Image (tube, rainbow, N blue to C red):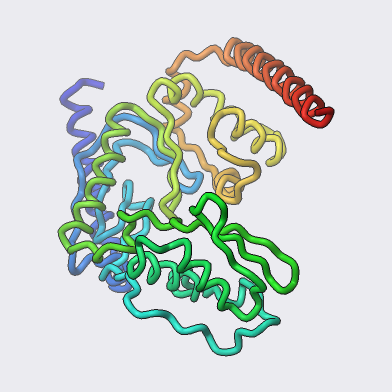
Length: 329
């Protein structure tokens, strides 16, 4: 395709994507994403990189947009809206112990399942951190010791935590400084400008990754995995082959671990990725033009795995030898 014609095509596609982005915001969505207050900022089209959103591959060009306080790529939500108005998480008044807490209560009774910041212990920790920054170990010991189901709570030998024993025999070690001094939980809520700047910074970083040719595996809850441009070029052909193969989901999950797409095994989001995976003609065409020799790629991968397995085996032998030595002493 001639360069002028290609540029014109990109512009037409950009206009189409932008129009979809602007028109798809329903009244309810605008309210949820805070579009009315913060508007929409669409980035420039990027004709590089790869984008998968919840398993679906998106065709180029890519337009990373800020829709209110949320982020989208080609109209697909990839990061939920930042909270607005921001919440002040500081606690200035000593929280009261919830009614009904007695010697038969458990730690779970002091939590709020719907709001992790609303639970008694969370609010108490923030109050103590603000009110007694120089006396935290002792104040925490007093706070935990006052719980009806706690038998004892004492500051540990190093002075940086509290050892708590319950009436039903459980022992917990509580950090005395679990909340860092620069935490948002101890600071005034961000201003409108700060919230907007934070979202825009994340938008620009996604855009910059794509401009470098990276592969972005994005999820609508904001989680993501990024492959560098080099890894995208070498591994994308095998990834497509794997995802379209007849292997079971568990086998595919195991392969994703080896390809550094999974940080743990299994992860529900990647199970959904496999279930929702959908390639396009464009993806297949792009992969076909990469010229990667899959047989050679797999041979190198097997050698690398064998080397790593051997290193793990030697390391485990050394750990076992050390355990036996310590046990003998």
